[in-house]
Length: 70
View 1 (tube, rainbow, N blue to C red):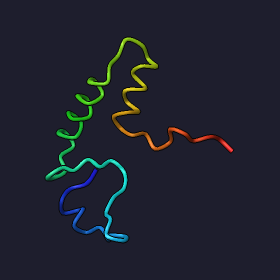
View 2: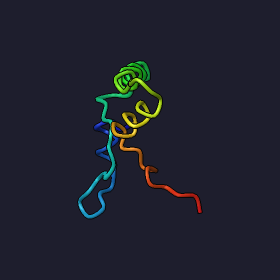
View 3: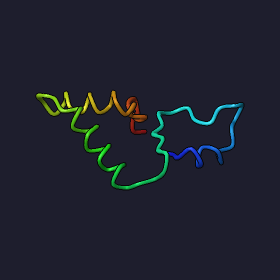
């Protein structure tokens, strides 16, 4: 999560600020963030838990999708 001011302070690496999905808020407000999170998670509901998890993974582009323990 970032605000425009926070993004402005980032140092670009080869002209790129971020390579992962990013939530940008005009200004940080916990209540707005929580409301968005509740609505987003609710929108990922499905008939089964595995289907819910798949929807959440797809929405949030979960970075550990192919992680394997050493």
